[in-house]
Image (cartoon, rainbow, N blue to C red; front, side, top):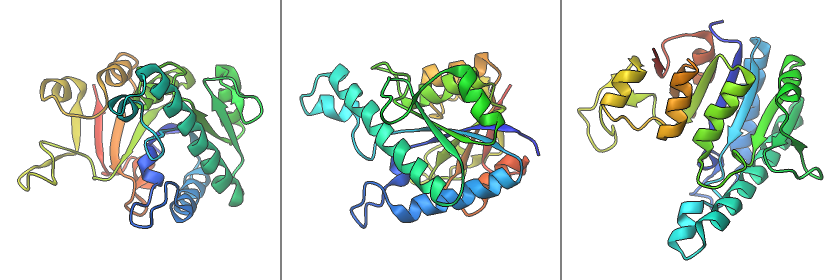
Length: 236
């Protein structure tokens, strides 16, 4: 396998089913559980940073009159709800998990302690990081890059609805072409929207490759883990 320890950045919207009006769709959680079992069987150590956009976004709250700091705090709590939902789904299929949060809430999860997180991973447990970085004004992309750096992840896998990075939005521009591989420098110069600037810079400085892939394509996550031509690889 190309990688061993992976950090999966999963958006809150990935858990959502708008057609059914579900903020968290149990069917999607079941699919995630099945994919994770395949990865673990292949030898992966999995950590996850989950977003909270399916429940609440700080920026959206600010637009509606909520103070930004308060809104971001609400968003962090939303990520914990998603983390607990993901934990339940994974444990339902026999996967051992730990939820660790950047904000202390011992009744629900363990506080984030780097060495403890790494020990959980070494024991084959899936570690789910909630509450972002614990600070307002930082996205869960930044939290993913930070945690990937802290735990020594071999790759940051960013789950999306498209099969990689394109020259333009493939939905709006039918002539857009996909990159199989691109350097950090080229991605920056082309102003490609991969992650927010803080997250991207952190990965670049710590030499953590980013793979952007279609999370909803069957078996794609396993193909990325194996190093097959899936998604778009960003590295030096």
